Length: 363
Image 1 (cartoon, one colour):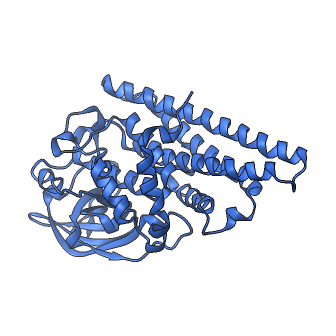
Image 2: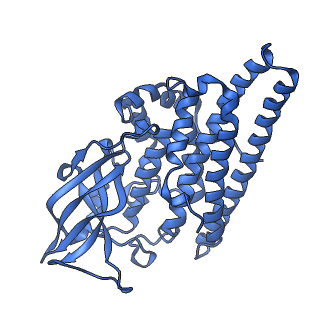
């Protein structure tokens, strides 16, 4: 039996998150009460090394919490997931710079995985130019990360395989210009806007490599493969949204069943459909967590295992979550299409989050 996402959150936390959700949508960013809760609980520091005052959570615990936060509200879950994911880079940053960067009381790292910048080598560091889209939580960020193509003069530096060398960097918020860019139907509270830097000099220790061989914190969390970490955390968000949608279907369907508009056979259909799809999603959730847990146990023993299962089950969970919601949607009536209704917000958030390219194609 798998736990409902609410198992991991106090009711008062859920209320704080959901009460502010409409204002977050209107403002295009998380609201003060939501952020206050995030800072109090240290949720932006899920993956930050303990040596830098982070939580350094075990992967299975973090993934379950992220599903729970996405169930509470899609934008909150997504921002915490993406920004805490960037906090994981603390395991790879130079100890010369990480303690100062991570000392901020309201630490929040936003960023982009796109390689849409350049870093030109200088004697003491790099000159950075570029712009990056869709940085969730950027309005609350204390620092930003970005991938850059490494240049030496006008020439592109190549890696060992002959491809352009791409490395991540970390910037201070004061050195970055924000650009409005998030104009989509869902995840409106994430504030996933763009940012740019122009001729920004950064020292060499602002560059790092996401590779277990280059980890500076010798803990299993920083030996775990980034790909499966990202796949699992994004899938958990989509799952949390689907569970929230199914929860909201309950009272909607009860009203229809207790009404007089539907025939007895129609009432049976919607009741049975809700039950079947709830069980279907929970079965896939259970398989997903079994893979994540097994993978983590391997990591604790010295090397992460079951990585293919984590990838496959992440994709299956995202696909199943979307299919279950879409099968239930027509039975919800017009209120599901009302942009002011919570059920519509959840539907929009799920269909926006599930567009992430990482879980689109089979590997």
